Image (cartoon, rainbow, N blue to C red; front, top):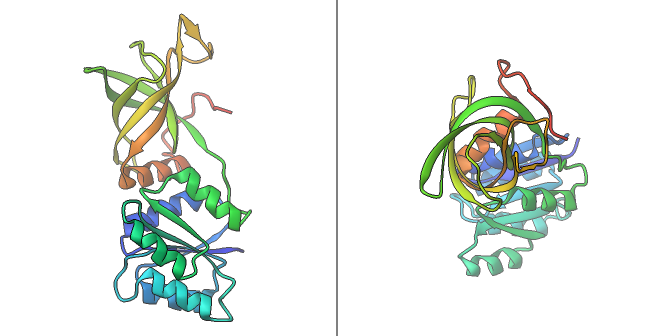
Length: 241
């Protein structure tokens, strides 16, 4: 089984990356400082490493350089992760010998595309689950409610009587059911509408498809866990293709 090592001193970011990779048939290893990461590289020989630059004990650049200089580990693919605003960090990472660089906040699609470039076994599917979850949202200065009928990591379908236009941005909040019990707050953009005057999918109740454009890492990780392991009390109403 292919091995991927995720390294960050903030566990929330490790869990977020883990949630992206969980659909794939991989052995996921973790480390929370640079020295621990180097030890895992030597003992487990992962093929791919995603590693934060700024960490205690030993920073990511030092680990990367040590791995690349070790003839037994030099083939290890290393993707460094750092802040988008700290452009000086980018040259530090590349000078250490990394194979690629990603910036925070991480984009799931770009993360998976990068992983798949080095490991074709990485799964890119966007799993959806049917559900019935009450949601409150605010659009154009007014508050409304609806019922989430379908959700994935990247979007959802919301049944509602409030007509909106494609491209409308709104703030949405909803609670995941047991055993997840997390409050999800996100900003989304209406990707397509399904109202009487423009009924794209007559089999669905009226409403709209929403693309998630902004979500904090903790909510993103909670939503990913729910999508991969939905509550046993939720019965799918329909399944998207």
